[in-house]
Image 1 (tube, rainbow, N blue to C red):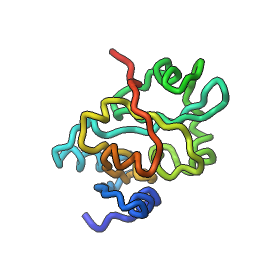
Image 2 (tube, helix red, strand yellow):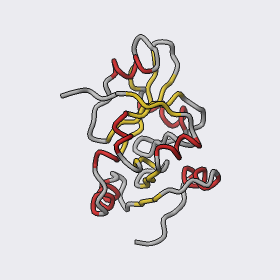
Image 3 (tube, rainbow, N blue to C red):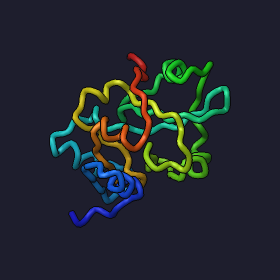
Length: 160
């Protein structure tokens, strides 16, 4: 594979001198990136998706859970002291965050939103998430994410 093209997320991490690991796939589904990550011995549970929601108060919130997991909307609402929250419409994502569906990163959004990461992130030396473009991912230590962005760690997942 050739040189990884830099995204704004990577530039922001470098600006703050934060070490990261980058992966770049050659498809729009993110499947090749996921395969590369798993081939390197990482676990699927340390790959997180970034979900943007809106609360009853009309405030927006960002939640991160492992890609295979479901966000528990009740736990998510409780974590940000909202009566209820729901996912935003996909068509609102770009204008709200500056990111497209499948390429949404918690770092570098147009505005700062309260961001909560599922507590399972604490189990890993680094978590992997979108680098702000479809098919691009970065792996960053949780402590290092906090140097660029205020995050909270809470239990957010539905139990099967």
